[in-house]
Image (cartoon, rainbow, N blue to C red):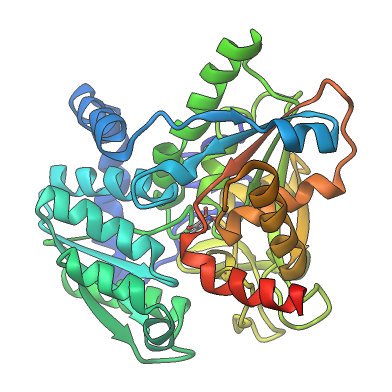
Amino acid sequence: MTFKNPDEHGYYGEFGGAFIPEMLYPNVKELQENYLEIIGSEAFQTEFRGLLENYVGRETPLYLAKNLSEKYGAKIYLKREDLNHTGAHKINNALGQALLAKRLGKKRIIAETGAGQHGVATATACALLGLECIVYMGEIDIARQAPNVARMEMLGAKVVPATSGSRTLKDAVNEALRDWINNATTTHYIIGSVVGPHPFPDLVARFQSVISEEIKAQLKEISGSENPDYVIACVGGGSNAAGAFYHFVDEEKVKIIAAEAGGHGLQSGQSAATTFLGTTGVLHGSKSLVMQDADGQVTEPHSISAGLDYPGIGPFHANLFAKKRAQFFSINDDEALEAAFELTRAEGIIPALESAHALAVLNKLKFENNNTVVICLSGRGDKDMETYLKALKEITK
Ligand SMILES: *Cc1c(COP(=O)(O)O)cnc(C)c1O
């Protein structure tokens, strides 16, 4: 049994598949039939790897955080995805899919975005590769994420407001899917995480797997052993975690730890901790764990970090949870804030709020002295300064 990849129908255990309206079938089928051959080809890999190195700035450092290590009594390494171009891991996937789209003969790209991070990464890849770019974004999110909207527009993307439903991320996904149905032959949909119908979860996980590929080689060089005792990452949809876990999930001895956004707390009605609060359901084209009410209506999630504010997780992670291969923690808003300030003061690194959820797990585990722990620092905190400053004012009041 492998945890890494789905079966030929896109299933990870009981989760995954492609639950799509008939009108989307040709697009999804085209991808299913071509993605492995295209991205496995030498020409594709040469171009993709070249861009990762010279444009994104990979490989990213695996940094031994000495002060954190001393405090927690383990060797704590940070995988520095925050140092990537555009500030997070999302660019790995956006570039990979944009290159794939070109090889499929598509000249028009659509994407959904919540806080704008995936929209910016996609607009960046499209500017570089000369592709038309349309980003769907909830009307409410457009109002509260003005700097990212400006970035996308400067990069040449068209930002289209989603005005239905709660006017946030899930409505933007619905608008993007509607566009894709109407423009099947010309357009590729760059989905932003390991979610969506097969083959998207596998496709995105493969593009992000460069994270654990590098960790293995870097650990081997540092310590002689390529496997750590723990790998820790935050899970929104799950793409940085899938990338950080990918080459370790089939190594039994490596403990896999996922941090979900607990929001105001599991019982508060304002949370995004899907494995704790969710049940099996279908969301955005795949069967997974979903936060929903008794009628199967998706419930509105909450997290202080926009990137974790999603009412589901990808099927890769749902399977890790169901098979008990990974341990999941729910990290509340205040715990994430505290972890962000701790890293900033201890190491001089301001993390993204999403990544701070992974850091907060350090308080919940008991390490032995020679344990090697790798934490995926998925992004940098520039975008979260407003939230951090507000918290700082509360603390010093
Ligand atoms: C978007 C984002 C996430 C959450 O997305 P995943 O697909 O779960 O990785 C995490 N960290 C950062 C910095 C992000 O921008």
